[in-house]
Length: 105
Image (cartoon, rainbow, N blue to C red; front, side):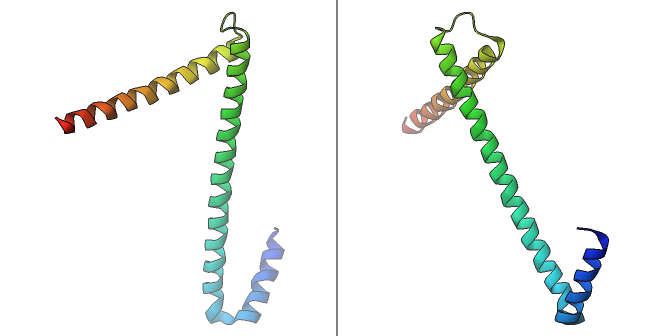
């Protein structure tokens, strides 16, 4: 939106709402805009993460088809990343199991 469009909107808002209610309306609209932006950013982040997971999954399938030998660098990178993620999950699971065993004893 250009400068003049904002000025016209403010003048119309001032005439319609009056000087008492205009600041409240501006604050409300700005909160709505912030909320919409926040939701849009979270959706964008989720979509990006899903795309990344899909790419990793596709790369893993390619690597399995090649029997995990002579992989292209990007496939090897994906496999390594998946191995790290699996190891971190396994480690956290083992830690949780150890803690639960300690509590039982």
